[in-house]
Amino acid sequence: MNARGGAARRLRLVGLLAWGLAVAAYVLAVVRTGSTPLDVLVVVVAFLRDNPLGALAFLGVYALRPLLLFPATLLTVGAGILYGPLAGVALVVVGANLSAVVAFGLGRAYGAELAGAALGHQRLRGVSQRLRANAFEAVLTLRFVFTPYDAVNYLAGALRLPLRPFVVATAIGSLPGTLVFVLFGAGLGDVAALEAGRLPTPDLPLLAASAALFVTSLVLARVWRAREARRGPADAPAARGDGSGAAAGTGATGAEHPPDDTMEAS
Image (cartoon, rainbow, N blue to C red):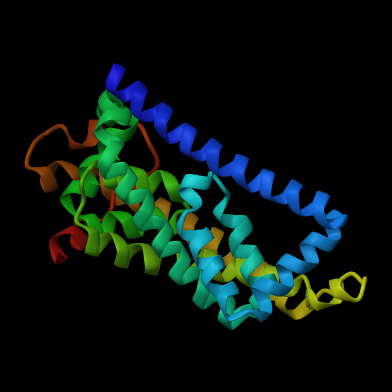
C-alpha cells in the first residue's frame, strides 16, 4: 500500500508541477508585457501556426499530455483550428500515438503498484482477459466503442501488453474520433482573424461534415457493441477453454467480448 501511495503521489506531483510552471510562465508573460489574455492567445496561436517549431511544440505538448493532465479532445480540436483539416489530422495522429505510448509506459512502470487488486475486479476482469488473449483486436474494439482514451492506455501498460499491436490498433481505432474533432476545430474558422481583432467566421461545410461523422461514429459504435454483446457471452468460454468466461465478462460493456473469429485470426 505504501509503494502504491508513493507512486500515485509522485505522479500527482509531476502533474501539479507542470501546471504550476505553465501558470507561472503565463502570469510572467502578462506582467512583463502588459498584454491581455487575448494578446497572449494571439501570440501563441501565431507561433504555433507560422513557426516551424510550432508544430514540434504542439507534438511535444500532445505527447506529454498524460503528465500535464490536459484533455486530449481540446488539443485535437485545437489542431483543426491551428492547422486545418489535413495537417491537423496528420499532427494529431502522430501526437495521439506518442501520447498513448507515454501513458502506456506510465502504466507499465506504475500500473501494478497503482492498480493492484483493481485489475482483478469483476468489471475489469473480462477486459483484461480479452486484452491478454488478443491485444490488437481488443484494443481496436475499445477504441471503436469510444472507451476513455487514457484508461485504455494505462490498462494496456499495466497488463504489459506488447507495444506494436497496441500502437497499430490505437492508430486505426482512434482515426474516426480524430477526424470528427479536427474537422470541428477547422470548421470554427481561420484563427488569423484574431490578429485583426475579429472573431473567426465558421466554415459550415466542415462543421456539417464533423457532425455527420460524429453521428455515424456513434451509430457504428452502438452496432459494434450490440454485435459483440450477442456473440461474446456464447463464445468466451470456448476461447479460454473453461466455464468461467461468460460470468467474467458480464460486469462491463460489450467491448469486453471481441468476436471469436477475430481472436482466432490472430
